[in-house]
Amino acid sequence: MFCATINGDGSWTDEICSTSFNFMCYRDNQGTTEYILYTNSLKWKDAETYCKSRHSELVTIKSQAENQVVKQKANGKKIWIGLFNDPWLWADGANSTYRQWGGSDPDNANGAQGCAVLTPGMADTGCTQSWIFFCCSASTELPISKRCNLINTKKTWSEAQAYCRGMSKDLATIYTDQDRIDLLQLKNGLPDNDYPWIGIYHSKEKWQWTTGETLNYSNWAIANDCATIGADGYWHDKNCGEKAPFICSADMRNVTLVQENKTWDEALQHCRSEYTDLTSIVSKKEARLTALVAENAQSSHVWLGLRQSILGNWFWVNREPLTFQNWSLGQTPQCPRLCAAISTADHVWTPISCDQKLNFICYTDPNLE
Ligand SMILES: [Ca+2]
Image (cartoon, rainbow, N blue to C red; front, side, top):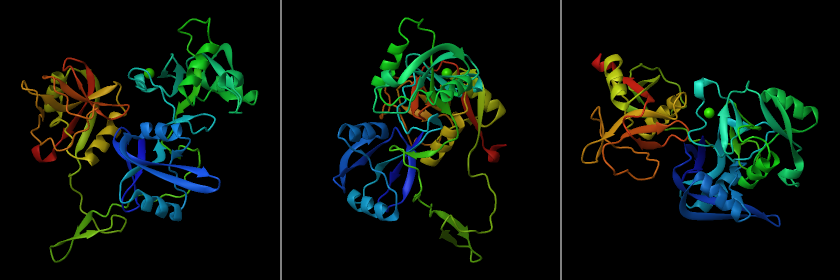
């Protein structure tokens, strides 16, 4: 999942949602739009919840004019806007950002878990399994307990959806934690391990506003940091959207996800014999690339080439400098002799006992081959 910010210059960029930024809420007050800038830094989801608790929404931008207004109100700050990108979509097209994944889910175990059940949190599982399910009518004025009912017959996810749609209903969309608790009430009396399907499924990544409005206007930053080399031998910076002749080189790290579970030491050995080393991450760009690669892992976390010395300081085993960090706790963990893995769910780095067996990412440095 990625979330979007508007930057000081009015352009937008996608960011890791667990990063903290300032944010802006807005609401319609008798025909006038009120924008309120909050200069405390929150993670995207917390910012969204904060706005909602004040009868407003994270700001939505639907035109160049609105973009200009928000940019001015933000006063040069980089702030979260109500735009997010998650491959998990609700089947009825709802814009609910509610996710209550349990444990390490969604882990896409065995590479084939595109649907989800209530366990009582959310768990991703294979769509061709057969489970009971809820059918819900769309009228969101009614509480979920009034508009949903439990169908105590086991069907695959698509059969269950077809069954609900046959009654002009759909599989359940969950908006709040209370919705989830109310749904669990509806299956009271059934065994705990009769998990009902819910209407969320894994699709293609799609940018959507938290308000459910479609993305018709956007203003993504065009990276202006590309360069050409001229006949004069000097470099010239150029807008990356422009066309120019090119030379290929291997300055983008060539990484490989190994879908085998090994301890950190075993993973290191494997990378050093088959590739160059366990991978390191030295920039935000590399963090993103690595996060995308990690999403295909069969373990909840993926080893990086980062570990602690006996004294507790973290270092990349390939001796690259620790210039960029993305710890889950927001600060460098202190207890010594752990190894670091990237979470496949939210891409943050987590210190884990080096004996755990996880997938891992190696890289190849062509200069060392
Ligand atoms: Ca799972």
